[in-house]
Length: 440
Image (tube, rainbow, N blue to C red; front, side):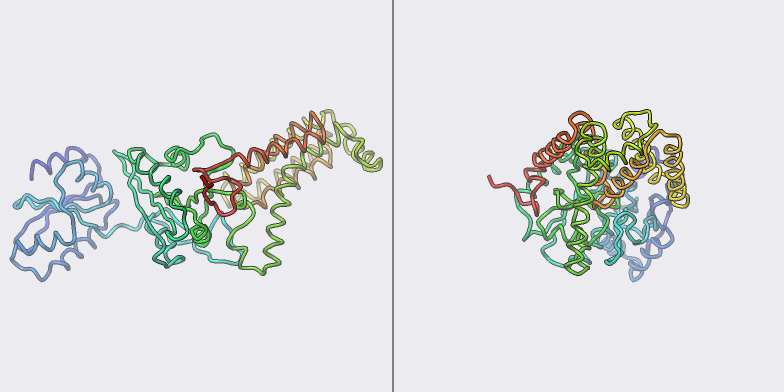
């Protein structure tokens, strides 16, 4: 036993947070080993003494008590893994036993807060955090039913990472669960850090412009998708639920809409549809009508547009691309800057740059209005990933419009629709309403 303890000490003894403490339980002397950065040792030792305080001098009863609250470990590798997973290891030298128990952990997780990316104006304000068990608990509060099934897995060899699969057993398609479970169980040796790792593990397309997952930090939204027959993945240290598969309707509808009256709910979803179409079409339509097909405008409007572009040295396509790139930089800066100064810097920067570009006759006044409307419209879509997808698709329409005019705009929309229609996730079409598995 001493040799095993010394071997473990050699393997991980250089860590300053490795804690070793000799303790007497009755007439048995033990050595407690764990990481002080993960374990609250005073409270853990107090808890242990309280659990075996009725035992005075019986070694057998003490060992039985420890067996009830812990697990016996024998291999050096599994003991080291247990230490780094935050368990307390009890070495009983005179009996040649090693027992691991769940200690009182240090508080290292955020408390339950309001959603930061899924803003609920009228709805529940609890959001997932980085702790896997906390996220599952939040969901069970929302979905308190025996139908909710939870399967947990551990990924990686040298470093362990937890992943949980959840589904509603009476609603989910069994073939979908089988496909996901098969992919998960066949890749348990892989390490999962990010959503891209999960995508690769599940064998989903890597270069797809449309995300295979719908991400959310709202338990209410996860509940809504579970009863629709989808599966949900929780990755340890990721404060989001990954809903599989995603569908087109996820861009326009969320569960929180149903907290409003039916008419308001329909109006909100219609606004998002209009926003997506506007973001896709407006920049390309501007280029088509200004540079390729100006004859489609009424003469008064054509003259007004021509007047706004008077003195602008660039073609309409170059003008639009230049301002779109600047807008994308402003949006990215607003995400990366600290919250205390981000909105101020991006708002002032956008106004100053836009006004300076117009005054310098580099772009037209009308273009500033067009791109501002397009950017605002793309932000009405549910989910940052979905909004980014629309922002990418609009470049396809823009390039075709600069070559073929209005015909190019319709061609771009057709290509976008064709791409969306061809998208499937584990055999489920992206255009599916509730994520039903295709027949056959």
